[in-house]
Image (cartoon, rainbow, N blue to C red):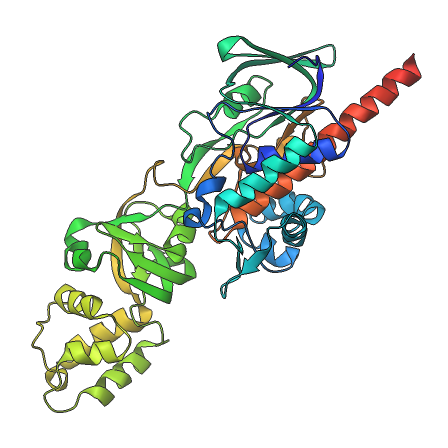
Length: 428
């Protein structure tokens, strides 16, 4: 690394850091990227189960409805608005398409590389950074970051020493990252950290309540309604896919609600999503209760997979030989509620950091200028990606925010350095 100081130093080579480096280099800045790991890319190679769910379709106002964080409702959306307009999902798709990797949309709006490989997106980014002359150093963990006389001085493991006129912290959050250095480095400049919590995690259900459903591991409901209930009050609801695991519930609808869930809450999952009311469900049960037809057969006719129909009967205390026509009225009403309004699953615990796909919490948004991603406390310090106090829902929203904030931070850092040089020249 012969250059000293670099114009922009990016700490972290995940999606946000790579886009920050790319944007800064496109502005003509000399850029150095420091990555503590042995490989660049962060969680990008594993996104979408390795297929690369990079973003989501829709206009920017629609995308913004899928972000949370900050102190007040809607604060994350207001904060991310400039970044998403600076580098939108359309811009992201155009970027990859121009480099031979078109993105394709699935029926639910998620955007994937046409090749179906997340690593192909990483190759495109690294190739472009190489073309622009960006320097990348791996196994370069930053231990100390100071600013003196308009220059950031960096020291780290393995004799790492570097200087930069602007720094972008893009070190990610706690999800699958046990020690995110960015929190510590930002705190050294006085930035406030909103305590991180796991987000987009599966839910563990109380063992006794879940016992009948353990055999349903791997069974999914492609699209259903889930209610979050606390103290008898419905706090939130979500529609989407639900997956049964060996110990509880997962799938997009559960993951998206998980940021609001606490142990002791109840998740009510509509097991027959085509039925909207318990009255309708009861009517359908009565219509199909002919002759000696078993109730399990009737439930399968309403769309329940075989294993889930059996589990539901066991959960409500009915046998597999129960005939639909002989079902007592109160039992039928209870079953109708589980089908349409949602079967109750009491929450025992949330998944831990090893299971989390995103981080709730991070650097306080009010201390960062959303128009530049620049620190309001330290000139020349910028932030990008999951290090900040916002989190998106499943479906590509977190990666899009990482790309967008990275792009805006890198571009702003390069322009900051340019203005500093102009200011210095005028003073001279």
